[in-house]
Length: 312
Image (cartoon, rainbow, N blue to C red; front, side, top):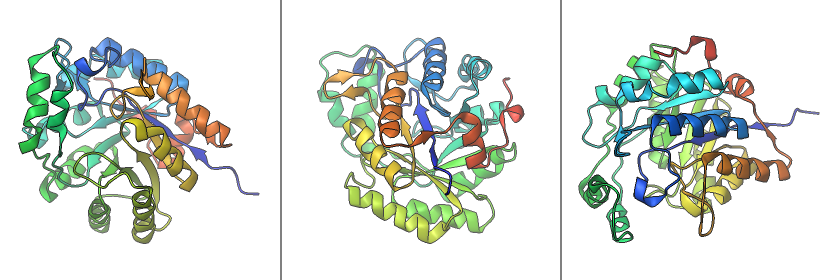
């Protein structure tokens, strides 16, 4: 009998989309990000997806000095795989976006596989009467004219520079065309199997939340990559647990965390990332899935191992 497939849980600890006004539980400071990451790992997350924020205002930042205030703490306290983003504000140059990944040489880095324009995010500014910081409303209201640029040149530069340190890439695919972009870079030898594909479903301006879209993304990935890829699913807000569960049943790994969803249930803010990890783990185990440990996830994803990671 074949061994039971183990599901990898990723926790995206803080992200850059949500703002401090939206939840008092969103981790902002380096100490809070470290504590949340460590607790999420203890709850069952094999991978911690990391962004940084200005400790004073909570505004997203790509400053590697800020990452340095929590990366080493997490590495010393857990066996978790660290996944550092190579995304960043729309106005930021690629060298700024990849600076933290270059300095800390994580086993894994996320990479958006095409340019993105968010639709409708400015409407979130209407939900709140007062903001903790002026930048929050400004960021949301400016979304209407913003594009997150990921050209062929930017993606290639990121693959060559960050990949030179042994870091592998989680290819974030927000639409079907992004899967073909992955195939293009794999054909050129800039991405190596097993490819790590993350289907991002239901965010503004990208493929919609219909379950049929998840099925279609899987079918296209199967056509393009055969057995040479590992698949993960993430979805926003109230759709998180439902679509992650659907993905797991179809063969995916899953991602939860406050980057994608501030809630644990309808009307109930998650008090921690660990709460979301524990809920996702409970659902998966009720469905008889086993949860991958960090070292099992390293084997599944073809990572180099924690020993190659650096803390400064």
